[in-house]
Structures are given as C-alpha cells and as structure tokens.
Length: 260
Image 1: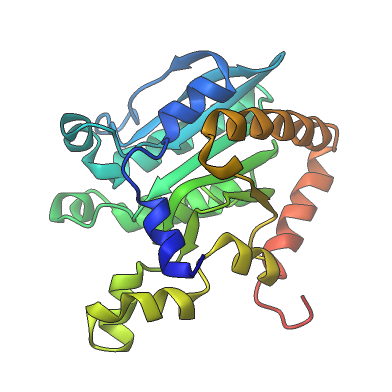
Image 2: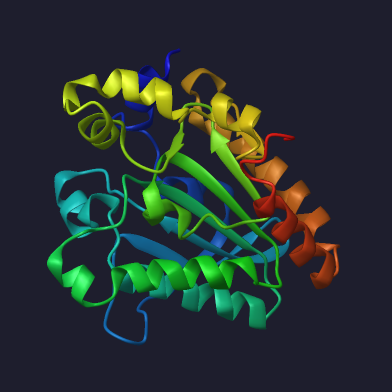
C-alpha cells in the first residue's frame, strides 16, 4: 500500500479507537477525570487498569465512533485540559511505580482560541519535558493517526509502536501540501514525501515496532498486541530507573542522525 492509502486506512470509519483497544487489552479499567486546574476533556481518556497481573496506567486519545461521540470528544483533538489530565495520571503512575501505556489517535491538538488562551502550547511542552524524565516505563502505541504535537504529547516514550496502517507525522498530508506545494489537492504526494507510514518510520529509527493488523482482524491483532505489550513491559520494569532514563534519553538524542 502507498502512503496515502495507509493514511486513508488510518482514518477509516469503524477503525478501533482507544476505548476499544482498552477494553480488548486491559481488565479492571477505572477511568479518572479532570486536570485539577480547569475541567474535564473527553478527548483524553485515562485511568487505572490491569494487564495480566500487572497494574498499569493507560491513557488514550479517543475520536469517538458515532456522531454524538465525535462531538463529545471533539473528534480526538484534545484541549490543554486533556494533556494536563494525562500528565497528572502519568505523575500519579510514577508515584505508585506503575508503568504507563498511551494510545494515540488524533489528527492534532485542538487549535481553537479557547485552547490557546488556556495554554495549549505550554501544556504540550510540559508533557514533552515531563515524559522524558518519568522514572517508570512508558510505551506509546499509535492506533490510527498520530498527528503533530497533539500526538507527541503522549508519545515521548521508551518505545513507540505503530499499528501496521497507522501514520505518525509532524503535520497532516493536506496541511503539508498546502504549505509546501501551495495546493491541498497534492496531499497524496505530501504523504509519500513526509514518510508517515509505519514501514518508513521503522526504517528511519523513529519507531520501535510495527504491530500487524492481521488482515483487518482486530480481535486477533489486539490479542497479539496484548501478549507483546505484557512481555515488553515486564522487561522494562526490570530495569532500574537510572538505566531506563538513560536509554530513553539516548533514544531521542539519536533521532535524525545519519549513522542510524
């Protein structure tokens, strides 16, 4: 599949989102709400759960399935409250020594006036800084779209995994086409040039694993993902915090270097 075809698959109606993934991968999910500063953002869901016998904190960006759900969750474009809620839950996880799993599916953070007035850029930047120094393991999984800083705010992780047809990019293909080629209709070319697919990103060293979608059988896909996630979290949890932080720092320092 070409890059634009994978982008269309990542955006496809009926593709499982964060809540579907949580119900398939985890048990005993207990959702927590609010950022303790302004309010609740339904675009970001998070709380406590179990993966096998291990207590974890899971945080996801949810687009919604029906029209009403999409409106409630702002089509997966989070406000600053959502990112602050995510950070609150990550710091709570660190306090109680729980690993963190994030599930990303967003075209980008909400860019409305209210979000900017309440510190959207600052909230995202705070997450980037704090995630880099979290002393517990973090695995980020991009389920569909991983767009711009809105995705990165939940993806500064020890490992970043993409589903087979997911995409991860600094900007949407349409936005890049408008800027680079002055023509939004050239989104297909932009998608190829941006190297947004899991296959491209793995070869560039930006991500760590591609999760097979098993030909569209997401029940089978999530079963395999659950096993892989449990195994990898066990290995990461066995590392002392100093080693975990050093490896995470080295991982991000190496991004973009030709020797990769």
